[in-house]
Image (cartoon, rainbow, N blue to C red; front, side, top):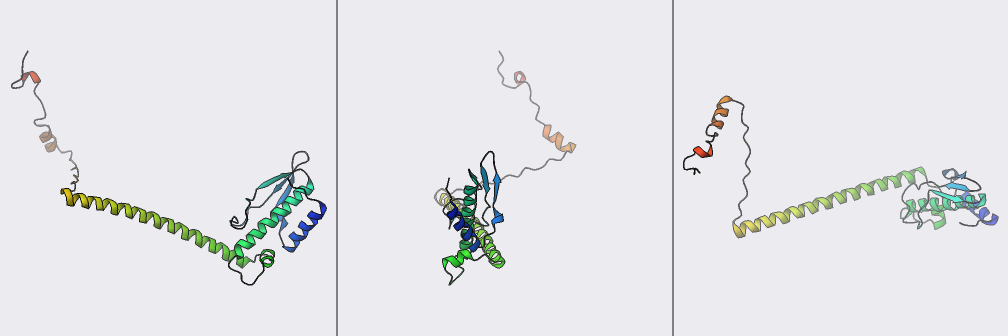
Length: 194
């Protein structure tokens, strides 16, 4: 819980105006009793590299001043981090204030999203390549083991037998049953009788 006096709130309001931040991205709702709930927006992209704290989705406050202070503070953090993440390494000659205060243009947002999409695709392909190389390495190790056994012990590869399908033709059925009948064990030649 933070305490926001009127002077601090005035500074936050001025900062939000100077940064040209859209306050409609977040909202304050009346909760049960005297509490207020601040709903914060999800960042447009991952800002964890430039913002240490995780952005909460909602914050429960006990007073209207605290709710406004939390809303303005988190909007400033989120928007500054979004702008910094988008422009870092892409903008030359601007000060830190210029980078975080100037609103992002539509072309900047589109270019950055395209770059993020490219990076995600590149990472996915690199992961698939690593998996394929791992499988190939395992296959080569297996083949090397087979070659070693063949060289040392004359390992022969097993022949696979494919079953022949029998046709339901009477000639096949008769040949299959000839000799299949057995004599009772007592009548067999050489059987012991007790």
